[in-house]
Amino acid sequence: MNLLKLAVPFNSSISNHVTAGIACNNSVLSLQARQKLQSELRNLQTDIDSLREQIEEEQESKADLLRQLSRANAEAQQWRTKYESEGMARAEELEDAKRKLQVLHRWLMGSRIYILTLLNKEMTYFNVVIPRYNKSTAE
Image 1 (cartoon, helix red, strand yellow):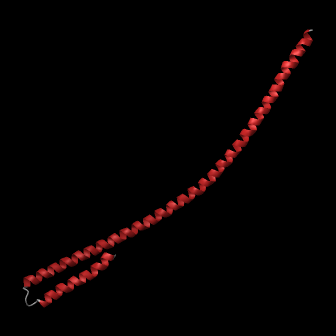
Image 2 (cartoon, rainbow, N blue to C red; image 1 turned 180 degrees about the horizontal axis):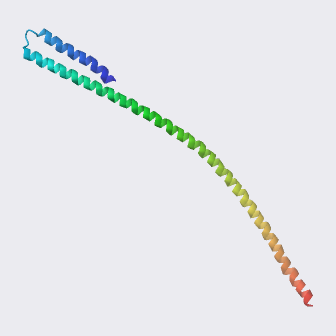
């Protein structure tokens, strides 16, 4: 945009100078020289118009890229928010499952000790009572 603003006064300035030069030296300049200056003026005006169009196209491209960037940033923020919230919920679920497994593990370990104690008592019973029973029946 700044280049466009600079190009307009530049274009007017060149036109004014060339036109003034032609007017002032009208009597001095030959027809050939005037035609050469007018041709150069047209070429400069064409160049300026071309540059103005190029600047406008660049500005449109920049605006389009900024819109795309804005959309991409908004989408990235949505995904970030989604995964952070879902990730926190999933982490809480995993922590809850871990606590449940720890409780189950403690219960199983306690049950195992209880079962081993019962088995030990049963084995003691079989080791003490059955041999006595066998002695008493054998006699």
